[in-house]
Image (tube, rainbow, N blue to C red):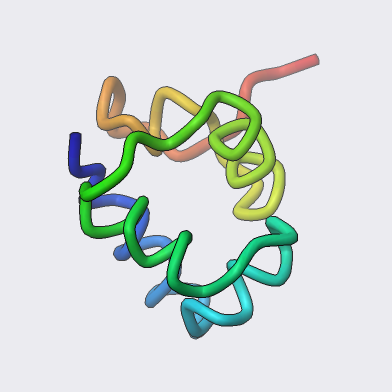
Length: 72
């Protein structure tokens, strides 16, 4: 399943695939496969990306257009 917002968020943050992969503690090639939809993004990585980009998992998955993180 491709998640188009992964690439959009990365590019909006002026980050390379390598920088995001390092934040997730993985090889760039693995992250590239998540971004391209070749591999399914695991829940732990989705949660970490939501924290990294300070947004919600629903926004990353395209379930909402509101990028604001949930209120604690």
